[in-house]
Length: 217
Image (cartoon, rainbow, N blue to C red; front, side, top):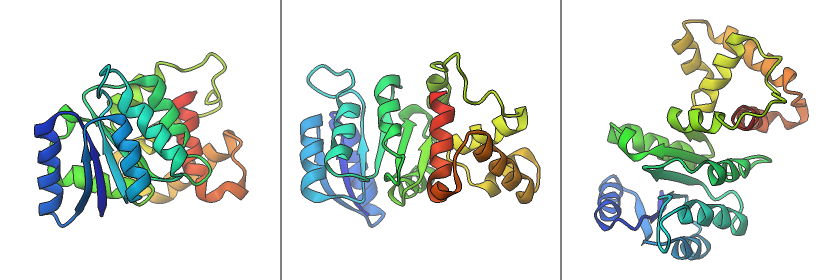
């Protein structure tokens, strides 16, 4: 994969460069601020970008805002946010860009990444168009649930299935986690799509749209 890295922490940035290079990937740019991230994405059109949330000058949410801007300028460019913090508002904006065939998006917390191979697998899933979310990110986004809950028609089991979908699990992985058959999970997923009013003509995007409804509900 061709990768852009954006993190103002030099040691972490260079560590990621070394890790990815040793695993056979090409780091086409390693930058330390949001403007440089946007410029690198526009210039290199990477397979995926790894982005920290808090970067200069204010160290608040520059990384996420830059990621949203990069996806506006280069639609469907995959982005994996890797941070110590959950910035809810711009995380929601970033996830919203996955609708309508948008590229992959991930949001992982640095101190919860316990295995290098798992991290690289998450990076590959985002690069291939998938969505990967740390459960803590999912939990904080759900705090924003509106009173008019679009999920109110779902059964408790369907909510469990949708929560696991939001964490990026496949139907097979969900079946293992819930100790049910793949067929049962497929039935629950179909019911979720129906109850959320996601029409068949958006079939290839319904999974992403269902997750977005869950996170923004």
